[in-house]
Each structure stands twice: as C-alpha cells, then as structure tokens.
Amino acid sequence: MKNVLVLVMDGERQAVELRWVREIFSLVALTPVPTAPPAIAGVVNFKGTIVPVVHVRGGHASRPGDTLVLLDVDGVRAALAVDRIDAVTTLAEEGGTLRAGDGALVPVLDPVGLLAAAHRSVGL
Image 1 (tube, one colour):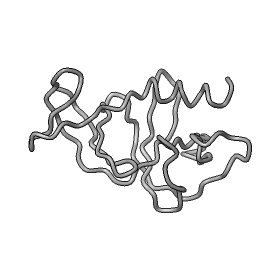
Image 2 (tube, helix red, strand yellow; image 1 turned 180 degrees about the vertical axis):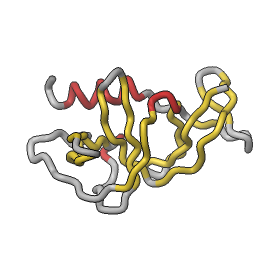
Image 3 (spheres, one colour; image 1 turned 90 degrees about the horizontal axis):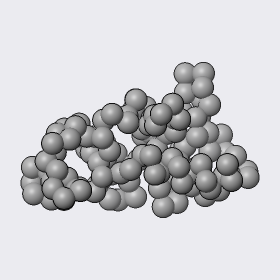
Image 4 (cartoon, helix red, strand yellow; image 1 turned 45 degrees about the vertical axis):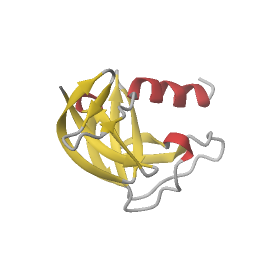
C-alpha cells in the first residue's frame, strides 16, 4: 500500500507518492526562461523562492490558474504542471504499479528520475 496523490497530466491518470509532495498551488504568473529546454516551462515565485515549472512530455503551455504540484527530492524543488488532481488516497501495490479501487492500474511517477532528467536537460 502506498499513500499517493492521484493526478492527471497530459490526459493520463498517474500517481505520485505523498512523500515527495510538499504543496499544491495555482499558478499566478509564469516567467519564461528563453534558453530553457522544452521540459522547463519557466519559473514561478513560490513564497519567495524561484522554482522551475516542469512539464512531462512537453505538456501544454502553462497559464494563470493552472494547478502545480510542488515536489521536493532531497532538497531540490520543482513544480509539476498538471491538468487536475483526482484524489489523495492509498493504493494497493502490484508488481511496481498501483491498482485503484475500480481495478484500474495507475502508473507511478518517479520524481527522482523526473527531476534528474530535467536537471540533465539544462546541461548541469
């Protein structure tokens, strides 16, 4: 069993373990970074800290009112742009994936790999 946030990104239902989630907030203003790779939509000012906004698989253009999930992986923070939040729940683990109460398999996001890939994409 895993405690997760079930969300929808790019039309696909996915889960992220709650241990990585710090906060959910609405985008107020996005500052584009002209030289950033496509995975980085821009940056936001979150409570006085500049945080990159990451899109998985390119994603859609972020605009005010969009939902962002603040992830923290070993002190590295990034906001993940999502279509919507479906639930905060506990799901049963089955062979590396999670099974929802309706029987559907829910893929689990890997925030460690996601942030590492975004970090590599900026050449660091």
